[in-house]
Length: 547
Image (cartoon, rainbow, N blue to C red; front, top):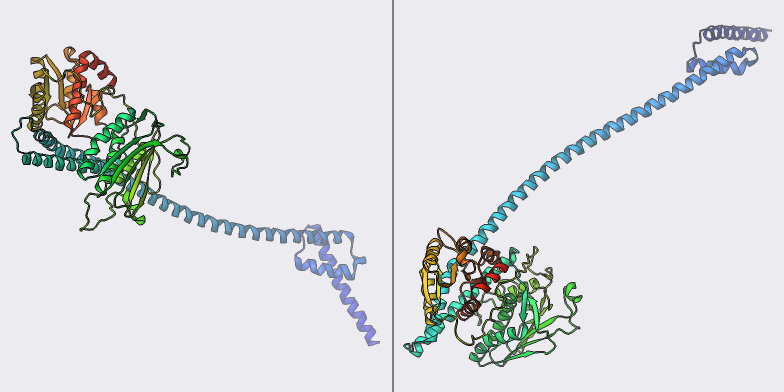
């Protein structure tokens, strides 16, 4: 009985609690006061225990509260996700800001480095310009007295008056030989500087191969004979009669290679063979591999040979096979380096084959028609594009160097004006020209030269120095060309200044020809005879072409 009473009392209490809950639910439903998650959990209990007693409106209210709570939970999750995203974005923004700052610092450093490089490049350019000017001026200062010395020594070796003893003539030959060696050294140093600076110009023109070979033979046969060597020259009939290349540079390469061959051959022979290059030759440059027909200038000697490990060294500037103080053969180690560089400028290559104790073979491969320089490879020292100036030289039809003049000498009886501020040059040139019957007048500068011309309108030719005080040779030449009576007068520029552009500037100023000091007397005389034999009318045409 007591248990029943207790159950009844518990039910009454539960029902009272349920009724209170229903009352609260009715009030909150009426006010649309949605339930919290705790109240929803409580409502779930009554929905399970008293579902039949709960009005549908309260059931809907509870379900609506559940949905609201779910939405709030999802909103909270979204907010939390948004906060995390914002935090990540803030972190990334901070990282980006740090990176931007680092980039700004790096850009500033790069800009500073760029400015520093520009300043250093400008300093190097200025230094290079000063170096070039120094070399040009030094070359001029060395060449000017050397020119006089060589001319006068040559006159003494000829002993035209017969008043020198054989020993004195030999002294003069020694002086001339030493001067020529010094000139070669000056030229080599200047050429190395030109190549390094990319300032060695190429002047292609048509040249006769037989005449070139004849000139080389006449120049080197005496040197070989002096050493008791046989000098053999072979010209293959398959070689074209004419090539188009820079004759002066080709002669320079052949001259250096032949000089070395004679120098390093104590006995036996030196052989020059000019022939079409075999098709089997492997060239290092692709342009030559595709070029087809090439000409091979092969110089072979029976000399001391070159060790295999020194074959590459010999082409490096200032390097020698034997660089010790006790070496038997002298030299600066510039010749072969210059040869290889010039060969590339001419669009060719030099190959070497040698056996120690048996001799060497150096072969220059050139295209028959110059088309441009090759790129440097295999350690070559050629680094910036070479300017090519195919100047139409006004002396193209003059006699070839070494060719003897036939018939009446044009130098006899003509008046020649020498304009030069160095009395040593004037004395040397006068001594030579008077020997051939010319009358000489001279002036120490450009202004005096113009005055001399006005007083001596019968002057047949002018020898014009370039570097002079007050009025240099270029300005003087331009002034003379503006004078109608001298518009076609042959003017030969003589200068020891042999830097890039000097030739073009001389021709552009109105000079008929350009000869670098020190000059070979015989070559200069042939040039002068050529201009004098043409007469003024022809010279004017050539001068106009050259300008």
